[in-house]
Image (cartoon, rainbow, N blue to C red):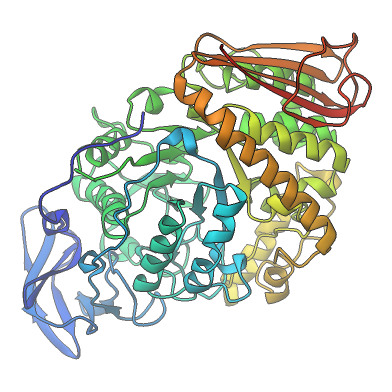
Length: 585
């Protein structure tokens, strides 16, 4: 269920104790540094002592103007504000006073219901040749015309260097300067919403990046002493100030940037033994924030747990099970995390199309541990399905897209299934035009960190032996440039663009109205051949029937009935797709 509550009265940023907030002609500054002996505000060259509260927060109010540079001097060391809304330069220098909450928005945007969602995952730095918010804003109408209804931005919180995926951010409140200013990001959001597109932001609340995260030095209490995530020190979410840092961040993006939702990265690494889990509190605070539109919270959770979606505060979760089933069915890959899906990928796809997740706690071939809990009670829209994502493409040694790994006819069938099934479909930037250029892992580290990243990246593929040992240097600019989409064969791109447009037009006109009428029972999905599936999803106002061949036709000729969309002939072709939308009369 999406959150949708009456408009709020007043600006909730006034309640925040982290960062700098304008209060008339003065600004309030706050920092949590319980281990520090002294903290002062550095404002355009002058220092003013800050006062410590009993809970470790330091604060001061001072006259200042928008655009001035400031920092905190902690036990004699000048550091940026960890909740800075903008930096004056890189992550190591001064912060800058800006007030994104002061923007006067136009257009009266009221959001969109989640059933409308066709998500487009976007890396701002590669989406256009310029790699900026401003350039992306000019492309929003084109995406809307194609049938996209939501863009999901890979993380924009500032990291060190010019290039990166965004998951190594250290200043989660500050848009990355390579992309543009806070105002330019807001203008991109406004342009997207003017075109009818929701805007969702990927946020990282499970770790900080390796370069410029000064909280480790002056607030060690922010982190757990014993536990580490795959990316660094684990965050201690039992600390009230730590919880507030991230909950306020979520509210800030939704409120000050008028976003329509957030995708929370790797929530399985957000460990909180508190009686009231921080993610539940975050969802409740967003629900109760008084935003004047539906707000959609999405998780990435490799545990396949339904609990957060059961709270009603989280609308969906990325569904890697669906991706793995399709990927293995089309490529035959069986290494690493694909191994459990290699035993019977078509059977797994039947489960995914029936219940959403494949792994729901049952024993799995080749796996010693069980994963997940039953989630078939959730609405089909509680699963964000994809054939490609930044993770699944970029976390390959050579960044190959699905179309480069399998029969293009099969990829077209998978594309049609993704965009017409009643789950929430997500396309990865370029997928809509059959992009063949890779999407590689890239970053912009220096010195020892660059060496460690390069070597670590090479070690990462020990479970994927067929990928080879040659891994492009993630720090090389040519690795970034090689990942640019939209520079391929014009005829092929137009073919795929037309296919995407036709499928999404059918989805908007015929399928979404069925979805909004409500589910009318469980899905009926059967295997009709070694690599053929028949699926029926019932709704209050009709049913949706798909026949899918991913390598062989069905064992018996399917019953003839009117079809609203076809690829090939499902009766005889090894790769084919047929869809019928049957409203009740």
